Amino acid sequence: MKDEHIACAGKNMAAAIETFADLGLAMQKEAFLDAKRKVTISLLANGPYVVELVAPAAEGSPVDNILDRGGPGCYHICYVTDEMEKDMS
Image (cartoon, rainbow, N blue to C red):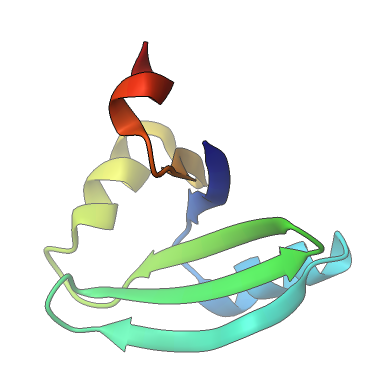
């Protein structure tokens, strides 16, 4: 099992990109709109470490709930595996 990315939610994508750039992460994928999920997503990386920034793009975005509960911050870790059952035990 390998960690793929850490997702962080925020209200202001430009400010989040600037903050993570100041921490040494470089743009891996420019911000793009996922209209179906009503979010804007951007990927930044520092070597093997990838951060997925997610911000609401419209009212009713699922990110609104995350921000309402805990404010901006990291909210999930994504893992990749070819052996799910083995890695879960």
